[in-house]
Length: 85
Image (cartoon, rainbow, N blue to C red; front, side, top):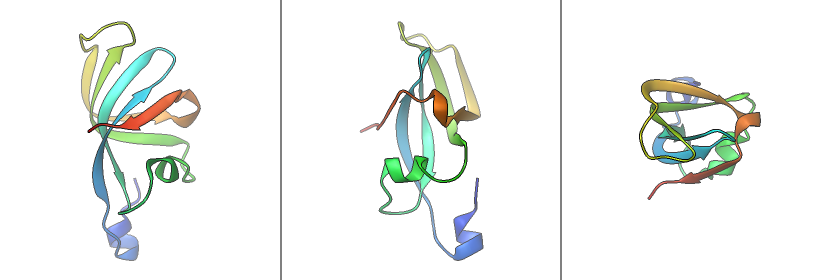
């Protein structure tokens, strides 16, 4: 993950998101520049979306399959993504 604050003096802000792939629902925290839309953040050059403190669920259930401090999701696998309230 690019450390924007160190590189350009810009702070990032955490945002809770849920990401759906064709097989999983993944809830976690992504980081974006302030006032940047979620779509703008995932359209940056990197091929992977990084999530911190991620929990992976099957699409058809609420029991977590795994919880990890970090996951990277290839952007081509994302079917749907939204902010958690």
